[in-house]
Amino acid sequence: MLSDHGAPPPPVMVKRMTDAGVELIDGLLIPRSCIFLDGRVFLWDALPPPKGGNLAHLTKEMFEMFEVVVPKPELLILGTGHSTLPIPPDIKKYLSSIGVGPIDVMDTWNACSTFNMLAEEGRRVAAALLVGSPDGSWKLSQTTPSQ
Image (cartoon, rainbow, N blue to C red; front, side):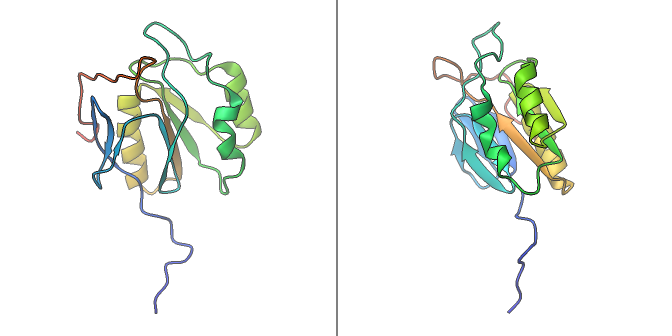
């Protein structure tokens, strides 16, 4: 019997972003923030900031799962909601201290596209995607990150 033990898991791929959340190629709809890591999807208890806000609400505890990941992703893509916002310096410093980085920060729609491209190339990439809004809604003007 052939075994693929040690082979990388198949990549998670985003089919599109909709008003309902992130839809994966396999049809799974993720209606809230999530982390893609090692071919798996983890729900993430984090909301994007209100319009015009910042990411000061993010805490290092929200990223602690990366402490136990071996090997570490060669790149972490952080999708910050509807617009690109700078990552708080303490979060960046924390992630660097546990061996995660570099960190590429962009809006969530573009983060999905970038993640798809790098995952297809076989890169060891992770994505932390802020999906939704503080009021629980998610509205997009764009709907297909794979295009």
